[in-house]
Length: 369
Image (cartoon, rainbow, N blue to C red; front, side):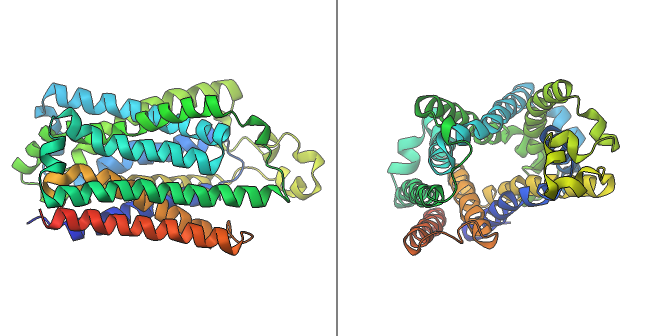
């Protein structure tokens, strides 16, 4: 199968849609604490789905991983654990900087580091991006993506200011620019490590292709290793929270909303919920759906990356841009921008248009190369 960058962009858009949608089922989970539903869904995200799709879509995945260079396996797992740290600290970035500024700094750094560091580290930056028209288009698309992220963040800041006039955010007194910037830098760099893990997994992809796996599915065994690293980080943190909060009983339905909302008994609107226990079957189903949706972002990512040729590292920019595009569209569909002014809505649509344009430019740069 020959490379097709336009098809690659389409797959990255599907991955962005999956990533932007995965948290929606979690919103329907009842009674369970964050660490319970996050780890439950994570088992599907980081263990079940990666292995299920790899076993179904690739040839001899066990043999491929067994025969892969130890260094490749170790680096993939290591970068996966670092990426897990980035995800865990992303929430702190939002807490200290607010949603708009936090998203701009963290995602901007993740995009820049995840896209540009691999060719710089390999000593191929100038040769790859500056010596030909295709590379210059891709570099321009990356810069345009960062501009689009900044515009969306500016719209988010405007939305926050307008909302603050009527509702004072509970976390307003937690704003800490210095601490937030430090956490955002850490989160952005750590989150970009997923891209490094994918780059380190090239020997695994080569063995998968040699075993007879189709080009589109060659990256699936790599995901099994990287996501195992991410699982390790999240499992340790969630286990600490489960021990601290004594929330393990929720897996068996021995909890009510009173365990999650201590003041529920004093809230007349929550009274009915307090008496109801955890709907186990529904909760597990929702977590399985959320976890699988989360995994599909990288399932489609590896498919898209396989079509980008020598500029495969540009896939990270396409992925991040797509996530922001579809996350913002989800926000509109859920009414998050309903009370915003016309000026703010125009600004966010400008940001989305800029991000869409950047993905088109990156796709074009790949196609002419």
